[in-house]
Length: 136
Image 1 (cartoon, rainbow, N blue to C red):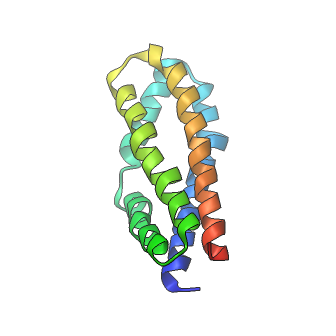
Image 2: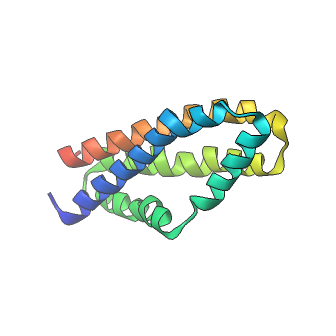
């Protein structure tokens, strides 16, 4: 196994863990709060997660998984590229942007839909980790 594959698998695993933490603890915790407080907390999380360490792993792995696809580990690379990165950019980020612009009435819908898609991102990242390690 090459260094790039190992780093891509590790980065996919880190993202799977982050998504799992949101699904298992963060979103259920926010669900226990009144809508206004939960919405405000999620808004802060959305700002704070955009930091150099997160972006290095999240976006840097796009490059690594692109290399993996090119090198023939198509499943592992595409699982991350499509199931984590593109899903985030085209589903979760637009929901985050809408949350930033709306009032408390959107929170219940946001919580439900965002969490469902987060489960998908977590499973895709975990599957990416496994398939990269297996050489697929």
